[in-house]
Length: 151
Image (cartoon, rainbow, N blue to C red; front, side, top):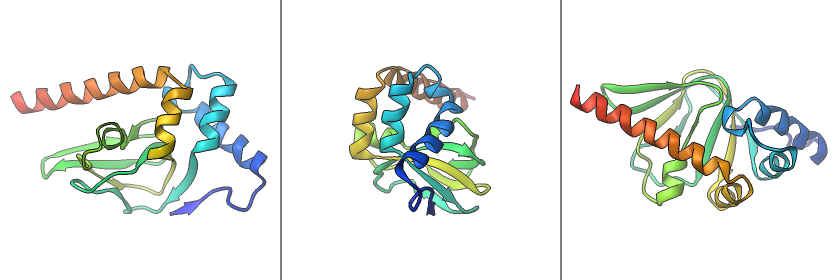
């Protein structure tokens, strides 16, 4: 994985992150101040195709938001789901402290925003609407799983 903006000026890297954040639906209602706060705690990372970002059963310390590319979520041999730009993953382990519930692998080269566990809670304080959006997303995922289990 390669970090973007390591050698660029802070201001330029921050503006680049804000441009990415503006394209992500969960941040669409954010003010510029909130976007700056998120940009300050997020890293933009380029991930090569076929890289495993999370592994089911392992501890998780990062939250990921896809900017470009697609990733494949694997829950079991028969349960897979594709994530596209604007979608996110990794929040469950940060919320409950439990191991990862799925393996996520880069299906294509990816560009992701990465927020660490420590900064994740700061993010939720800075952007309270995000908590609601995550709850809606988690509920949707649970309903999809229930539908798939009941056939």
